Length: 376
Image 1: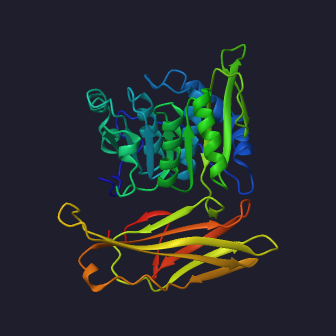
Image 2: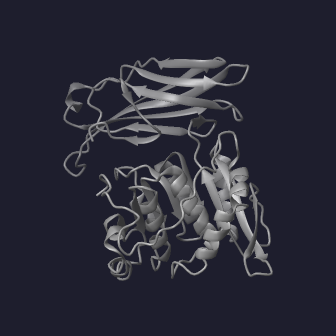
């Protein structure tokens, strides 16, 4: 289901062709600066005018659609996710942009749309149908760690607007976004959405934030908006937030977790963390390593093993490969038939300290934050 996208093209019969927008993400330039520069161009204003009347049934502003279009083209998106299909108006737009940008796929989820969205999608041109998948699921059902999802380049979060749901959707989307990818959060004029974005940003070092707030219209009826990186409450009719996931993995006092599923061994022999300390002093990196073995069917037998070991490593200034010495992570022979996996938590010991993680290897296997499936 998440395989290679079909080869379809923006010139396919019945597919609207939108002007490409790319080249506005400049190295060294902040996300706010990029958006301000883009929004001052004729191509931005012209496309915004075109999107005032298309597509029908899209519940986000034409300005937000232009920004999404730009991000899809800028990232040459291979995988796009929409949380909140509703009447699939925005879905149509996302699929059209993704098709024009290359050969990506769009996934859209809505737990209440199963009697509506599939029928709407069937009215689309065949090229768009072929690269769009609807899932009748909540975000907490879709964005699960073992679903073998693609790394999403662009994710639009427009589901439930309560604070707990927003915070969940942000963290789950962030975990499934590629490094350098983007989250776009609609309805940031609502306080619970805005508070969720602010708290998420505080807990995730290295993310870039840009808020675009529509404050009114000009004499020609076009939206007037402000772009900044503040997440304070302001008087605005509608707003959205763009979040860029850093290309690097940042580590601070908040726990960063790694899990290696389907672990083949009975012993964890070697753990290496390639890390950079960009300060002029040493930083202590702490963590905990677990080797677990469980029955695949817990109803048959409650047998389980959980071996854990705490560790602490001093990281000097510069680039270091920290090798963790394991002393107790050796399963007994009767654990060989059990499902085995390794879990590791990393953090800096002091609040305010920050490290950059270049690479993590467990017994020779590269692992990323979150769950890893070496056998898939």
